[in-house]
Image (cartoon, rainbow, N blue to C red; front, side):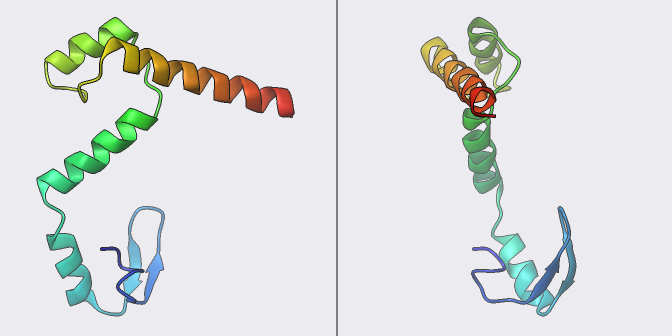
Length: 93
């Protein structure tokens, strides 16, 4: 659950809180963030964002447990989608 969904008033900073109406409630929300939830969030964004590895690099690194496990086809498809998105945005401008 997020602070906003919980209805707790807060003043945001880029990556933190400047002020919170209910610090104990914020602490309870933060206590719910276990390693599994953080790992799932990280893997979600690693799957969406482009990375500098080739398909074979990504598979090799994933075998060592550094990146989420993706097949070479998935890595290539993600890279192709990113390249197409970037080139499409350049054409429109």
